[in-house]
Length: 122
Image (spheres, rainbow, N blue to C red):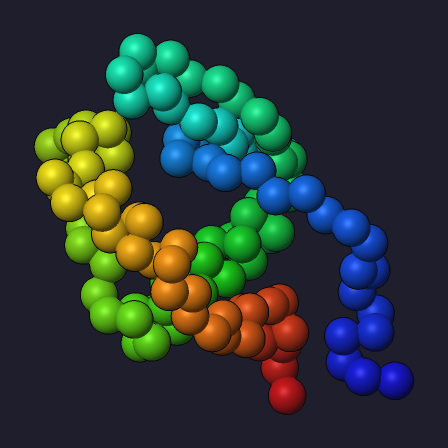
């Protein structure tokens, strides 16, 4: 049995998200994912993830690892503006659409995903 046999691989639909909200209480973290319409500013939340504090911390580490892996392979991701992070998303660089079209025309190999197994003690 391979190391990935324990993970269910049923059909999963992906939804794009360019908006996130994170809230928490003493027992859980709630992470909302959605989309912002850049023209109207309307936000449509399409899913919510509820996890306990331990899993929230693990998720944070997984994202840090995935971003580091991405930057190693493709170059540094520009930081969002500290004074207006949402404005950075809503006001992308002028050549954003051209770069997005070029990226879709020239797909690149996907590296191995970062998983919780990357953080298990060996």
